[in-house]
Image (cartoon, rainbow, N blue to C red; front, top):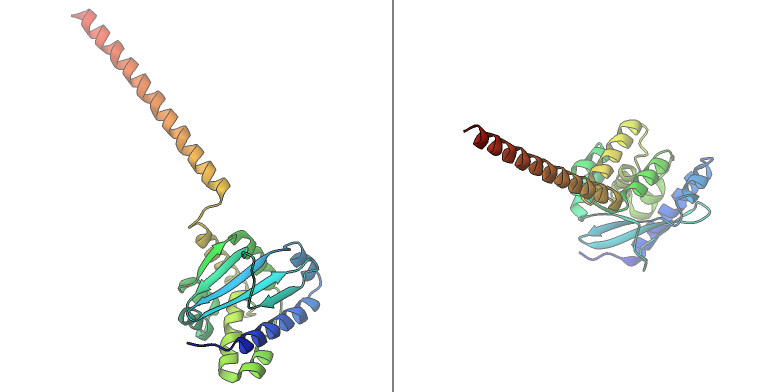
Length: 215
């Protein structure tokens, strides 16, 4: 399937403008986002291959583009069919959790970003419908609502479900500190087993000696 780079660039501009309007109307959000600088979120469609990048600037603004040379901080990836299932679902957040969407990278940063964006009232629908038409525009707007959990209907439950999903995905590749802690616990257990085995051998030897002396 072929895609028009000009259309993708137009979607990026629309998304960037919608985010800028929402951030401007939400006191404190720009400061929260600025603390995440220079986080870079990649949304990667694997078939067809379409990448969209959200980059947080030092002033709290979010740039949206279709090309970056740097490694993203965190990446949400899946096929077009997986994303379309989210876009067409009555509950996009639940569809995202239960679908074939993968998350790689710093999931803690993604959770923080999701919490900030979920508080914004972002108007995805109108500009995307103007650009892409009512069907595709509505589906893409629904997908973006699922990713940012901006729905007012299930705001709190969607945030909780997405947070659990992000944490669970992150468990597939535990942070270095958590892995080191686990390996240290294993080493400690091995030492305890060795000591217990040595004690058992000493007790057995004493029992054998006492048994021989009593004969």
